[in-house]
Image (cartoon, rainbow, N blue to C red; front, side):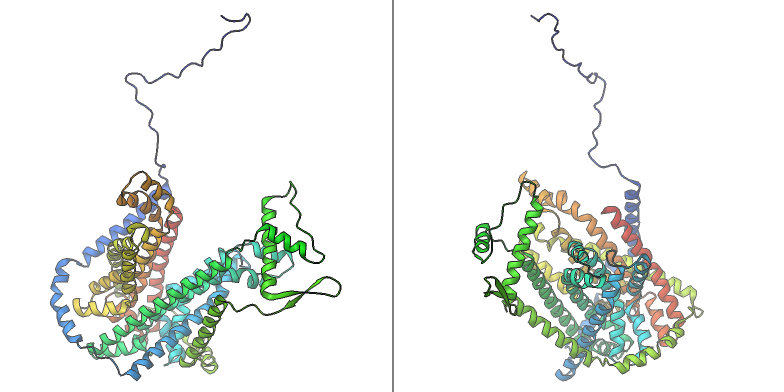
Length: 617
């Protein structure tokens, strides 16, 4: 029964359902592919196809390795027993190598800091300065250290200065780029606060930007020290003294017992140096984390302390209009002031009833003692390395006087009548890089997966495979190339195999780090639904880490292309052999042409890597 004048509410008309022959509308669950995504996937597929094609074209197969088994056994018999140099001579070679490497790393840091400040968006004075500094960084990274060593040899002659300049200038390519990225990632808050007080640009950089980026700067320098130690073996083949030069001399005289003994020493030295630098990096990060951890105080203790001070009052409660951010900022300011008072001075009563701060030095806690000890040891090592390397103002002055005449020897570029051979050898170098990267990918993916703690679930298993990767990474690629040249013969096969095994060290570590850095939330959600370990890996961990793995793969291809150029020096095929021959017969315009050809190819691959990472970011 209804009331007069009112109608009962009617239900809205139901949507017509699908008829007997109709189909339900399809609900899309995957994102629609974009043109950029399809282009990036096509580029990656072409790289994989190129790697497979290079692998087949170079005849890298089981039959090739089987045919070389007899050579491997014969080579092993010629290297045993190992013939180590006398203890005094060996110590001198090790100290000479370490002195050059340490001095070169310090030189790269000194050159990279101003370049990074000019290249970073938040500290550069203008677009022109940023582009120019970025160009210098890319050029230093693209030109192999052997080319810098050839030029430095013309300027400085025999001595450690040649190795220091070659390694130091080439290291700017990596160190400068990572330093610029670290500067761009700093928090702008402290710099804004200094700017508000009237501080200039230099004061803002030294007091706000560089202190924040310091942990990254030190970690990058230590990482580059490891790389320079392995690269020092290559410079021995162009006359730089040390373990690399002793290795080159032994190989030239076919003294494989002495050569492999020196290679073992170099391997152990690289392993120890990387282990020590890794421990220092972890300690540094722990100290920074402990220093940045806020120290909480109970409100009643802060209020009681302030109320008990002569002339002090208890803190007032914030008004209803105060924001949480303002309250938190005030609390952190009070805590910082209390901490500064505790470490920098003590309060003493004054005659007028107030308080005075009695200034004193910071307390020597365990963290400060440890950091001071490392600082003193580092300074002593740098000074001793500079003296051992023969660095002096007179050497620098003579080098500056002959710099421009030496540059004139390399210009203009020329082919020396072998232009066709250069293009053919460049093509072989690209094949070696593609095949080596493919071999490294096949080997590094399972090793990197087993080295990730969040994948295997067992810290012991992950630690074991981390150690295996570290051991492989400690072997200089030049030593691998020498072994494969003797076993498989001269040519591109030895270069591809050396790059493939050498890629396991860097690529395996990057894959393991990328897998461990994924968000654990989705993986835990899958575990809660009863998913097995392999389902969690393929359904959550790998898809989230895959963009980073793709970026690391392209970076490894970039590294392998430059390494393939260097391995040609020991007969591993490619354009590196032409580079060494041109330097030996003083055809420096040909050297410039080879550098420009390799530079163009490196920039092409690096541009592809930057674009693909941007698409998948």
